Image 1 (spheres, helix red, strand yellow):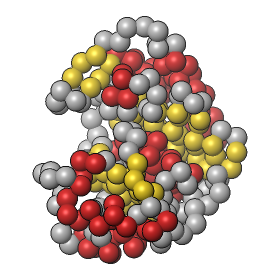
Image 2 (cartoon, rainbow, N blue to C red; image 1 turned 180 degrees about the horizontal axis):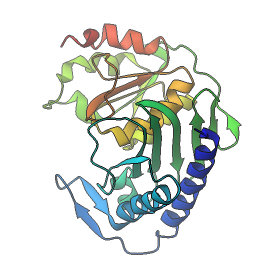
Image 3 (tube, rainbow, N blue to C red; image 1 turned 90 degrees about the vertical axis):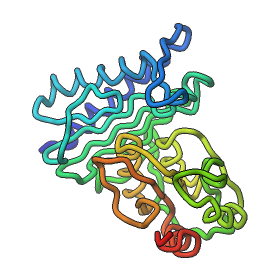
Length: 265
């Protein structure tokens, strides 16, 4: 398998998709809801996913596709090569702010991440990695991640998870928020993961994400030595929704043991 060939195509298609999104900014969006009033989708989400599917089907007809908007394949396993696509991660931000969203793409071979691409369209920041070949922000090498401690860390965390909620005991995370240097929330898993990769934040916690939310970012973060699990410290399942815990080395273990009780909550 010529992974350099796939990588080159994927990067070009992501950039082209970004240009399509930028050109939509002065047009009226068709906005719909999905599972609830805050789960939004636009005509651009659908158009961009279909753009990728057209390119992949034409160039790599034997590859499979898992896409957020449902235009890809129904997958029961991760055999073969699978493209995991979130055409616009952070749709609410895209609608309200026209910033703080990204295209997220992960390409997996037999369940192993080979290529990760996250494109911050508005800032023209392209984060990308080919497994074993390093990670890049545009053309600049991203250095390997160094260990960090809680007291000097910024944690990306939605305020919802330190309020009463039905996913986690909010009392678990209050001490972490208190002990950390600061917290941030950007509303897009893809960007928050690459912010860990580049050291803009030190860890990212989310309660429920889908594979296309974290597939691209996982390849980039792991290429740099970052640790990715669910909140119980378990390996992620790229076919189902799960919680997500991404952190620099050392910091991941500390938070898991001290604040998340090794997942025994």
